[in-house]
Length: 369
Image (tube, rainbow, N blue to C red; front, top):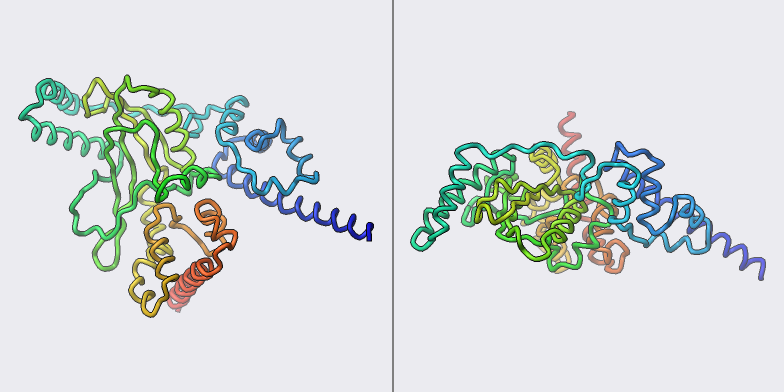
């Protein structure tokens, strides 16, 4: 019996090591794709540091030890990961952009003239609110054109069927993004230190002529002398990098109390042209287009799952199948579904994705014929 228990213990350790090794390989593959110019050995060292080990060798030794199962649930500390890459000589910005900062466009003469007008108007703003608002709108539109941000938020656009706020950009996000977002109501993304915000959107078409909008960028114009601003900016930049966004300071463009505020641009990494291509055959579009049909005779669970999927700004548009969805989305943002703690909702989610993939396959076969 003792020999059997010992053999079972060894087998369990081997199984745990295999599972943890697989998890580690998956993590390494994701980060290698994100930081393609970083040497593999250096990336391994940075991952080990982020997981709490002094070296990659120490991490490898832990994989063979009795506590290897713990590695499966260990989250990488992206701040430590970032610091180790910098120590290894990589020019990593605080938003995880690799390389020196590129030169940004400078405000043109007419934009600087608008800022001068705003400064004068804001010295005695009483009765000048309309002119101030009009100038700020001109500045926002010019800024959006210059930096390819889409268009400023429109409150009463009747064509908009659905509008999504800041969502994770999965082409550039880091593993563990859900840890920060899950603690916010509705999965909202709040960049620390933000003030005087201006949101920018792009639209994605629906077959009925309406559109859905996703947030492409956000401008924050906090006061330069705001308390804890340097720390807040660093935290905001780090959060942007974790969710696949960029963070750039462009204070010479600030049109809210110009001269007294800085301008921080938060922007998705993925171009709108790519978003349009991905949207065309996405699971999310299919669900939106077929919602009324899928809701017929649907139970409460199916309706709830459909509503959650449609409402969530973080669901990737480039999902391939349910397993891909589990690994890249549910594992991060809905662990109760990833680990099967709600079998009913998980099964409904899976069936919806199966229906979508079957319809895609049928469409492809019909196109070939």
